[in-house]
Amino acid sequence: MDANLNRRDLMKLVVAAAWTSTLQLPAAEPGAPLFFTKDEFAMLDTMTDLIIPTDDHSPGAHEAGVAAYIDKSVAEEFRAEEKDSWRKGLASIGRLSQTMFDQPFLDVGKEKQIELMKKICNNEENPQTEPEKFFTQLKQTTAFTYYTTSVGIHQETNYKGNVILEQFVGYMANEAKNGMPAWSPDK
Image: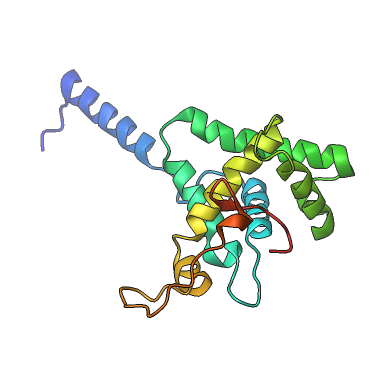
């Protein structure tokens, strides 16, 4: 190799070195959220699990990985307003928790978290406040995500696959609002 470099070759080397150093991204911490902060993710995970808790019949949203799926979906979303709606929604829940209990949402007990959830779901058909609007978005996304997981399909709904059923048990439509069951911490 020639020891004498001309300016053009030197510029190529400098640009190549600068380009490769800017492309080296730090490795993500294993298990860390992709979009949300750790606190936002913990709040999201707690709220989804309050919407679909574990019961005697099947695991809840936490075990089904609902928050992780939402985190991945939001991280891959290209529209900034969609990403902002999740951040703003979680922040509004944090502010409401501060107003109601003088504590962050994650620091209050489960009973107070349920009390807050009841407050924001009361006006679900016509949400007015930021927390009420966020609850609607969160509930719909949680239900959609949960019932597309293996837990939701096979354990919760007892889906058997492509088999002939002698009798179809059906669905109690009178218990649902707008096609979705009303949220209650008891269900």
